[in-house]
Image 1 (cartoon, rainbow, N blue to C red):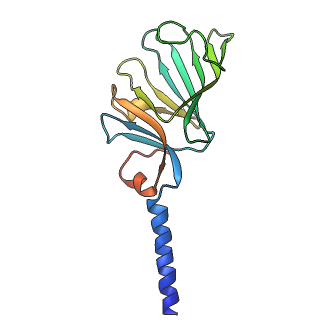
Image 2 (image 1 turned 180 degrees about the horizontal axis):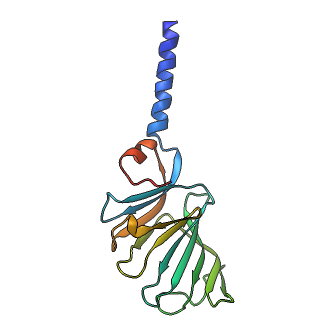
Image 3 (image 1 turned 45 degrees about the vertical axis):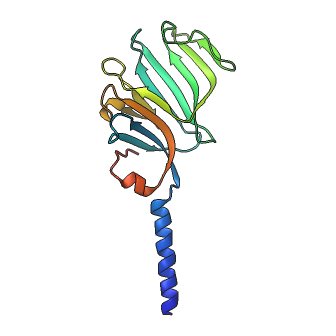
Length: 171
């Protein structure tokens, strides 16, 4: 009987170690490249949509970049919405994309198929006001990262231990 109890104890301990130390869940991780203590980590599932909204620095209008986590665990941009085709914004779509102008005068490129393992962005110091839109919640990125810092956004598998190490977790 004592041997059976010891075996159950070690099996339970092994399961606990796996749950705590092995990456089992996928997260959307935003990390400052300049200030490594600044993180934002959100649980994400395959085919989950999210967006980055910001104000364009030159023509001062709203830009929406829409993404989804694809089946290969990569970020796929599928839509871009903006108000001006001047400096820094496309005046047509890439192959396969659909470029339209809406009734309210916005430009939309839909059916985009641009994939990234990660995306780097600089958090605006004055105008940009970067926001992450995720599951009907809005995250003002300047609340998580110093203005002017470069932030890398990428999907990652993390263990519970990695999450518990003192990062800013917001689920």
